[in-house]
Image (cartoon, rainbow, N blue to C red):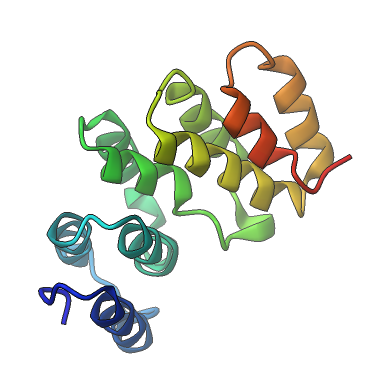
Length: 158
């Protein structure tokens, strides 16, 4: 389904994969996840894979988090960079603030629209459970974060 051109097939494949693989991911499944990210590099498809497959795979295999996030973050492919920033979107209180803030700073210089949006989105989601930390992070990095990232991060915070 992921090899089809239409994004609706990608979303369906993501849903099926999530339901079938959740809590049963193996370390080798990261190859499948990477294949899905590279096969159809549509923003929505990449986001769905990062938020619903990569996130669950890394929850099942926390010993792989730094290895995978660092590799994705250091890659020249912006879809992998975006995935390294977004994978914690649904983690709420389980979010690793150190990794999140490091990833945001690492890519803060990027002029890529979808990287700037990913930074803002990730910070905004984390701000739902840790608003003071996100506001403080924003203030400390006021001149580093791009305006779009800041706007998205603080959208629902006062």
